[in-house]
Length: 392
Image (tube, rainbow, N blue to C red; front, side, top):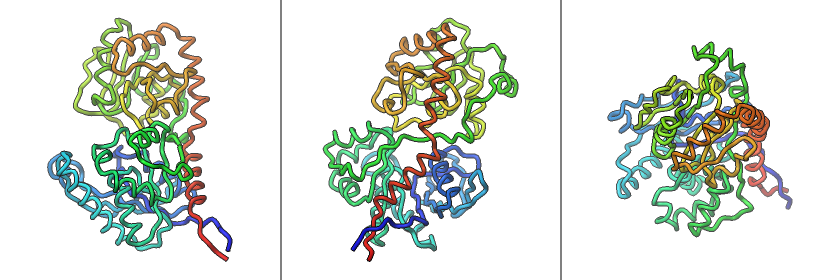
């Protein structure tokens, strides 16, 4: 008997959400799937939708099945079966997981094709559902870990979570910090089936553009010094902390806040604040001078990597989750909870244009190691390596 690597053709992706039309939710998952589809893999996506959010939060209702398209125009199916969600308090969150998994099983039965493996993006919900399908139908599954933090159930339901780690054919983590969190929580991880691979950038979308032309397009003055923030306007991401730091600069520094959330920035030199379509984000990044994200928790920040690819120096947290993607050549690491640290880093780059320019060039050069296309192929290669079959 000899071992052979199984040919991978049909891929099933399970995730908590997926972009529909111009939505930005989970766009990073879509970009990965797009890469696989453009590379010739047959992909289907199971992304259940919460009818509770449709009814009470105004979330648009998606078709139960719709076609997503890649930049090359190739199409694949996205199944958005409906399920109920409740509060995130522990007792009701279990109901959320129950209905999510039931919705995934229903969608799985609608996928009328052979599945070579399941790629579950995130442990809770998708990972749990993937294990159930594996136990019932024998389909091998892989878990992608990118959580900024794990819920309390991660620390309570250790037996069931350990079974997911044990039964998964492989685990893909976006950072060493996530691996450390799992080990620190006393879980056993087989390092032979673990791949550490930070998120990647789509260089067909995010690349350096002519700043003067982009600012003219966005009706921004050519001589402005602009700080940009991209992310949820939340306590975790640090929109308010950046807003307060800017108010203490007393410099002619403009700001762009891309996103939305419970906090509304009030700095008096904001050029734009609000959401934008993901396809337009590269223009706002290229119109800016410095990217600032004083976040306190991340898996691996797509926003930071996209800003680097557009040639922006980075100011972000001095925490372990950034260690895989940031170096001092193109970033200033700060205490994300310290307003003075954030302010001083911004002022340093404002007052030292040569330093800022050198860091911008280093950001562009360093971003090349975070290619989305290479990441997609590395994950598939890892999956093929772990999908060993016995043959004659």
